[in-house]
Image: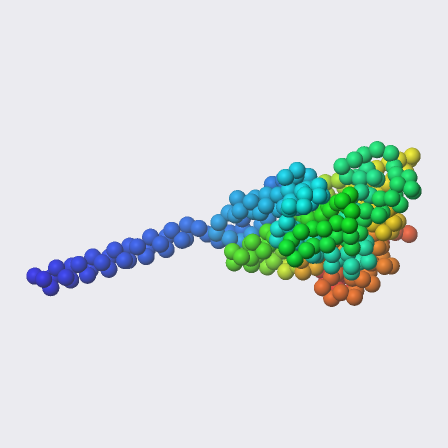
Length: 341
């Protein structure tokens, strides 16, 4: 009798174990790995994240966007960056701000100052920042130029941001979207995701393949004033395992005395850039780098900008300029052609 009871107990245990395994199998099958989407509006622009995963990660992505805003937004009165710009000496930079400062300093040096996050006083003077009004005089420009230059910023070992003049301010608008793209991409990869595209206002990082099992297709807009919301495409790129950013002159400008004043300011001169570039698209390993170099190329132009790109094996670029005999002329680096569809 003891043998029978033991046998029945053993059988019952096996049955319970099998049922448990079946329940786990069926419950795991309920979460099919599919392409998810997380999208919305942030920093006065749109964002869209596509990724192949069992769960939707929209809440976590939104938290990352908020974290970035609290650290690096010049429009958030409670951000670390605002406190630094207001000369709060008790504030220490967090990891995000340290990263962006470091990357900005590297690109500032590499581009001989064509990319410079201390340019805000000049942007404001020309009416493209917090302030609007009449155009600045030559004397005013010369005075403001003394407040511009990443060489006037020092990051101490304990995270303090020191400025040679309290009137110097930092604005990372020309690198911010690219950096948050990198943050989200890094988060997706930490979840083991190998197929994704992160797009924040046209700054993009993509890995793996799309839902059709193909390389991601990314359109480069025609640089036309009427193409405000995009959709009118100049060319399409096939890209994977890279990041991309585009900067353009054609959407942001103002008219003074019947003349257009473009929003890209040359930090080295204090005046709107004279380079005949309508848009610059850069492909790099990291989107923050691509974002910063795209802005720098708008300042440097083809003659000075393209040799800089060709000298760096991690960068490729496409510059769209006004054409002499046609509407546009495309200049691209030697390695860029492989991305053209």
